Image (cartoon, rainbow, N blue to C red; front, side, top):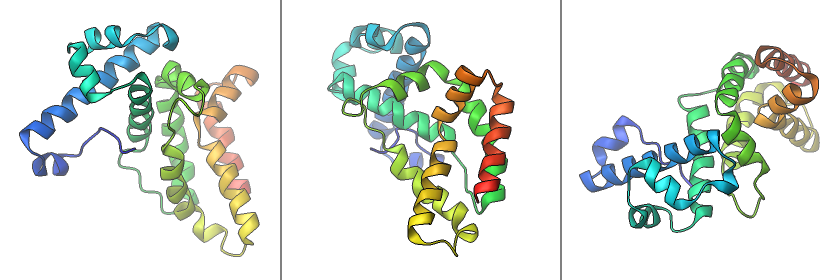
Length: 193
């Protein structure tokens, strides 16, 4: 599922109606994210989201027919917000990106926790399929001599280290700060790659 975030170039190509629709969708997912920061996601109703976004319930349902669709869109928006404008050429770029990535995860902690805890069949997680090519490109120079099996294992390990799961684990179980967790992930990535 593509993100609802649009670039200025895309905006120029869109009709006014499409621009308004994208803006409304963005307002709705932003309202959902804010509600999740203050309430448990199971307590968030579609009516509460509509009210927080300043739209009617029929408008909300026109854009997101089900709660699942709404929460899936939020997951896509989180991914887009985190990776917007990122082009990783190699491991050095990836390692330099980790602190900013972890800070972004920390800023959206409640939303991130909900997204990770939601059952896989209830929330689509398109970001994994989108993240893999980015990581493959960054790791390409460092693992050309690896077997396909070893290359896939490396990719899966780096995927985990660049996910909010790693940050949350280090914060919750080891009481590391965001900076300490980012330094740990960066060190591991360098060692693995």
